[in-house]
Image (cartoon, rainbow, N blue to C red; front, side, top):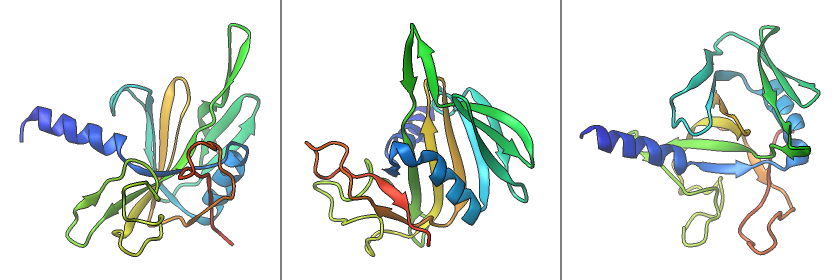
Length: 187
C-alpha cells in the first residue's frame, strides 16, 4: 500500500460515513440531551476542507466534563468549566445572515474481525438492503459521533458505543422520500 492508497482510503472513510441529520430547530436540545446521558471520549475541530489536517482543537475527554453554552450567534464549548472554543452558528456576510444548520449523528461500525462498514449516508438508502440504523444485518456500532460544520470549521465529538436514534415524521426534502430527520431516542 502506497501513500496514494492511504490518502484514498482516508478520503473514502470521511466521505462515506453512515450518518443521520438532526432537525435544525433541535440541535442545541439534542447536544444537551446527549451530553447528559453519554460521556464523550474525544472532541476534534479542524478547518473545513483540510481533510484531517489543519487541526484547531482536539482533546481526550476521558474523565472530563464537556458542556455547550448557548450564546449570541453560537455556542461556547467548555471543558471542566473552562471555555475552550466558540462555535459559530450564524454569520453576517454582506448584510445577510447565514445559518449553519447541519448536525448529524454518525455511526462507526465494524464486524467481529474488525472490518469497517461504510455507507454513503443514513439508511434506508435506495438500492441497499438495510431498512434503517437498527437493521440486525448491519455490524454493531462501535462508536457514535456528533458531527457538524460551519463556514470555517468541522467538528466531531466521539462517544463509545451506540447513541440510539429514531426517525422523525418530518421530511425536509419532499422530492426525496428516502430522506428523513432523526432524533435521539432517550427516554
